Image (cartoon, rainbow, N blue to C red; front, top):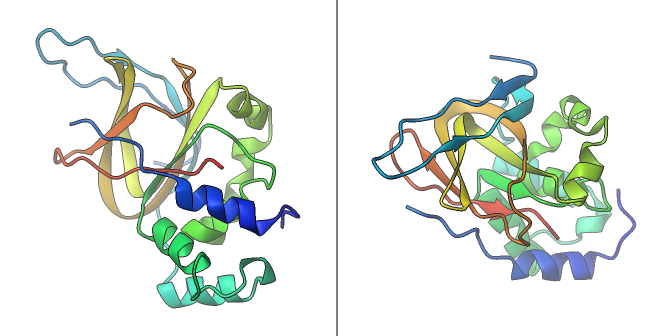
Length: 202
């Protein structure tokens, strides 16, 4: 558990806005490109799926609430601002990060429900990945109940295509092509639907 104050973290989370959207197991690299439209240049990014848990499912809402209630840090989970914060994380399935954070991802892990898989995720940060993320060299995506199909750099933004799944968790790390404070990322499903993405940075 981090020892940082909860109030600033809550304020920062609640001030976040969603990233604007434009229209098998183990470590794997994903660099497949999709066909480009005429006049468009797609540049495939070799991303690393550093954690792939195909059988993982988000805990039930009841289990999630019990877990947070058992942690004094989160206080009353049915009272604002914590209630609103928990709801925001719970209503998203895709998260992106451009900082690793001082709390070793404690808040993102617990508020998203990914805490049930924590023991399987530490290899994603066993090397210098946290430093590379904080230095702007790497970005990270968490895909809950989705699977990464492709990731490209197009028109000065990242374009990810993901496949909806009934279960599964993927943590994807990829080299950054820009240095903005907000990651220019659009995610679409294999059915062509634009998906909501939440920034986990604080």
